[in-house]
Image 1 (cartoon, one colour):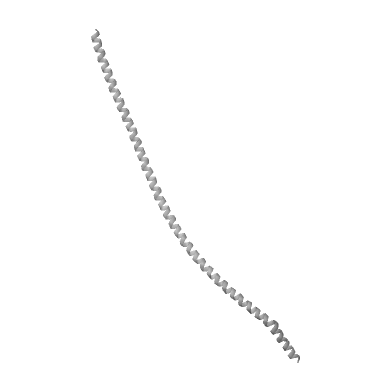
Image 2 (cartoon, one colour):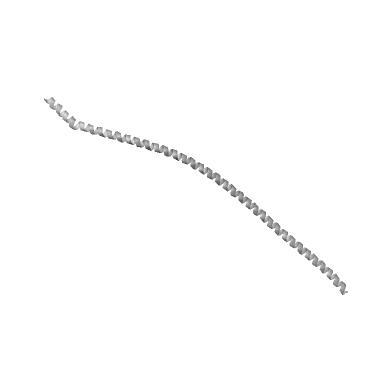
Length: 138
């Protein structure tokens, strides 16, 4: 009978203590496995999103480089155009100043020629008048 009592007590211990603990451990194991599966799915989603973001950033970087290259080319064209225009304006200003200086020189030359002619005429007429005056007074 001792053996039966011992078997009964073991059975009671197993049914009341060990089996509920094993059930709890199995339940926790299932929950942990489910949580790990969820985390794995989340990680896969994050990795997929990261790859998509990387591709997007690479495309945007390439587009930005293209835009910067186009802007650089347009800026260089504009700068070349403005510098050429300034050079033309500068040359036009130089030509205009030369023309103004030439005009002033021509005007001064014409004035001095006129003054010279008038002076010669007056001096010549004064000599003639003096000769006539001298001839009359003698």
